[in-house]
Length: 108
Image 1 (spheres, rainbow, N blue to C red):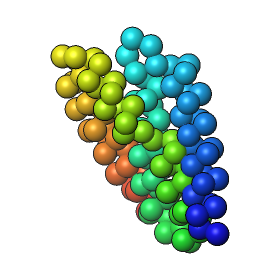
Image 2 (image 1 turned 30 degrees about the vertical axis):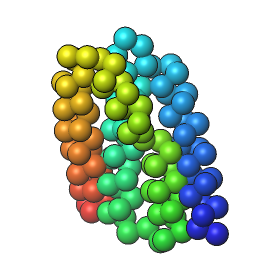
Image 3 (image 1 turned 180 degrees about the vertical axis):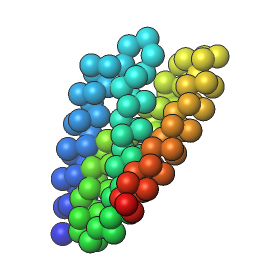
Image 4 (image 1 turned 135 degrees about the horizontal axis):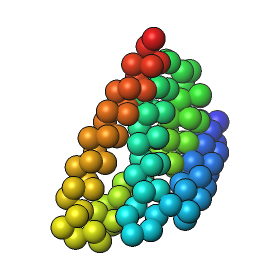
């Protein structure tokens, strides 16, 4: 059952990631940046809320795992050339901050 929940959450998250990237990724990968930051916030929130194991499988591992993307982030960072280092640093710092903020909101 857990595997099915991860698959369903992942299908929804990956579809949403595709749509956001399709509409926002242009000269700069704003869509990838957005899904990684939002996914980090949500995972921090879901973790703080101490969800049940099935719900965490659906929303945390499945949805957030499907929504966020390291592979596209890595390729886009490389493709940006010299600007890629700044993009990578900003993405990592903002995503970590978003995760912390989500956790803090979930604890409040």
